[in-house]
Length: 245
Image 1 (cartoon, rainbow, N blue to C red):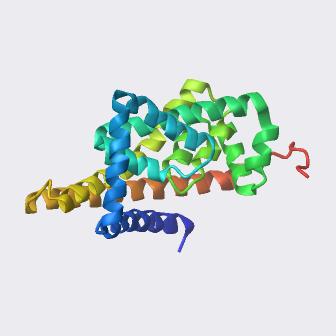
Image 2 (cartoon, one colour; image 1 turned 120 degrees about the vertical axis):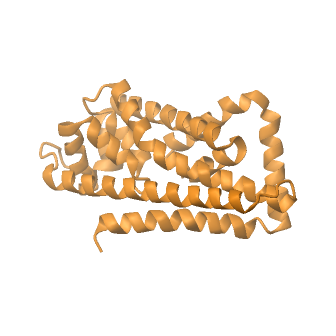
Image 3 (cartoon, rainbow, N blue to C red; image 1 turned 135 degrees about the horizontal axis):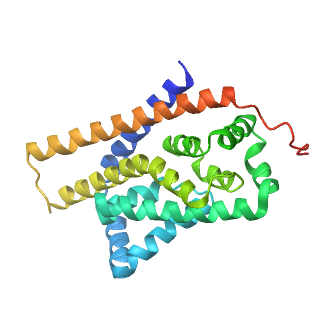
């Protein structure tokens, strides 16, 4: 199976496994108690939550920490649309910080963290040649180390605001998917608590929405992977880089 097809299948399977895990652990009383306590903490933040949460996402992005849990939490705590927006803002803040780090510290830092891998070194050459288009596709597939790429963008000739625009467009589908899953998790908790009793139509709408969202995200990821693979083959690794050792 080609790597692009593998990425598509893996992307869909991971999303469905997350839903299954939420359904399974939500049946335990300790989990429900932990969720309630976390909800109380977020509730105590009040209106500051719309500032604190994006900053948490920003910190995870800058520190190269897994951001999937925070993306799920966006939908869980704030709902689909607000959750998507707050997580996207946090991602953009993190991308902005990483861009300036790459710009100020230059190729030495980026080479140590990214360009040791010949695949990403080839991608570096592709970004230098094709700019915003590669930024968009490299952010579109959540299987790529997108947080690392943010540092790489800072050493390119792509303008800052142009870079952020394409990062936002590339990250949006994946963030929306995770936020949707978080919203489903919140729905499941409300059902277990007896706070909600959805009917067959609501189950069909939520389930259909999940299938559609996962399908679109997988298709976009598949397309992005194929495009990046093509650019990697076409773009030579920079030959003017001095030995890293």
